[in-house]
Length: 374
Image (cartoon, rainbow, N blue to C red; front, side):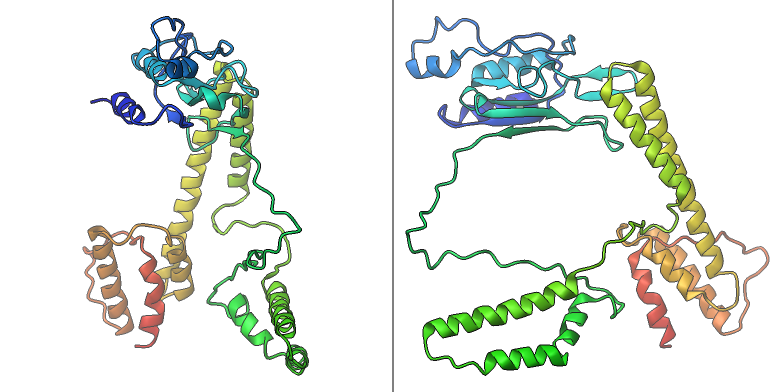
């Protein structure tokens, strides 16, 4: 059973009065096929006739071709009463292509809705192409029923504002750890004096207790705001190897993205887009490889291990996959070499020469701390 058949079986179980939004990459080039039934004479059920017979503007499509999935996809929409928004909605009235590849463009990504939802769709946008996919993202805005407003005259003691959330920056550096700074700030004399003043206030009624609670919470909120607020400064990349050449290549790739997005049917602009994206990826691989090679060289350049270089190297792989068998073998060799180096033993023969190991696991971060205690 194909994916479209599975989808048809699923939609068959959805009641007709339910609103449906169907979207995604269907790999279906539909050309100029009509996605709505043109003959309703066979429908004797008034509910079915009302559901399927709504007339909409004919959709436009800049991709005139039809592939093997195109006709089955259109038949699925006709049987379920869904209509395509691409090419007939404000923001995409011409049916812009959604897939841009080096050899051409096509429209295979759609947003489809029930006919009852069509009038509530306000806007459809085909987003710009990116460096991460050859498909353009689709977004739409739809109006919903306004939320029922609660009258101000009604007493709603149980309805309160949601508490403000604070972003705590946990760091090994205590001076940058906001949770530690928050605890230390509570020992400040001015904060203690303010809390003592609040706690010395008489509490005789429930309103007094509620007011005291609000004052204490507000005091702690102000302290948390002061601790977690950071000064805005120039954005810097956390990747040490991401230098000016990488930034320049990224700017050129983004510029090529915008140009190709403005005219996706241009072969020259599409070629420039993929060329600049390829150059950007290549220079990133080169810079990162050079950086890691230099870090490995620093680790093994002298008799004593350069722990700072090892830590910087391991920080590059915080999000990598865990050890595989090849990584374990490399790390076993490294630990043996390190042990022999610390003991002043040099048992390595001239014929036993291997390349510098590359470490790919965040576990190495704990290695300096464990071995420094031995």
